[in-house]
Image 1 (cartoon, rainbow, N blue to C red):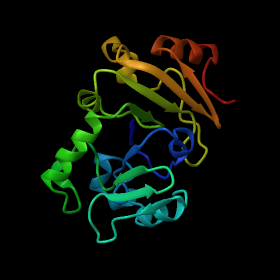
Image 2: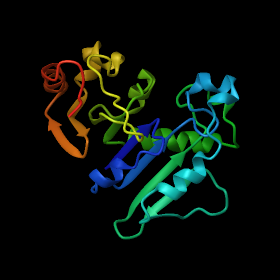
Image 3: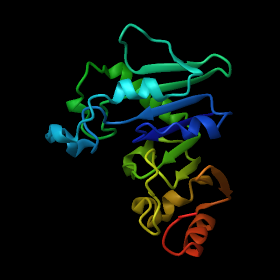
Image 4: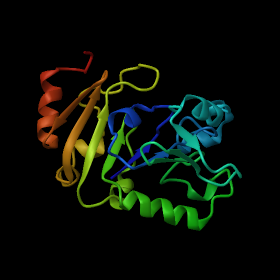
Length: 207
């Protein structure tokens, strides 16, 4: 099993909650931009210490194993056999012509292959471009988190993933919806149950 997380920032909650996941694919436009593709037009959106912060904050069981500046950064938990791939400076899937590092076509093809094998898509405060769904398997598990790495609430009904909410063709592809809410893991059998759950919470998940 593998999980893809676009806009991951410094959020390591999936490593704690999904111990059976063997490959984590972390993607972010940081450090060059903290605002996706559009942030590349201005340096004010950059977070230059992001990669160093990532290495300092990842759980200590995950050790960086590629030390020769190869891309992406690869971390491995030698106790569990889990691997985390960090694709930074990457406003995926937009703007592939403006990558700010020497990413090769081989790297891109391998990333697309990994996404195509993913069993889980993680969403937290960032709506993944609908094109990402064309790369994922026909069925996958949607993982939603109601607070970002800073503790800010990110899940307000009905703003979550507008592309997904209003297009049933995508909703039908979710095998399950898993909500990570303040340390709790809530699993729902489909997207309809998830929306009903949000509606019951009225405006937001604040518990």
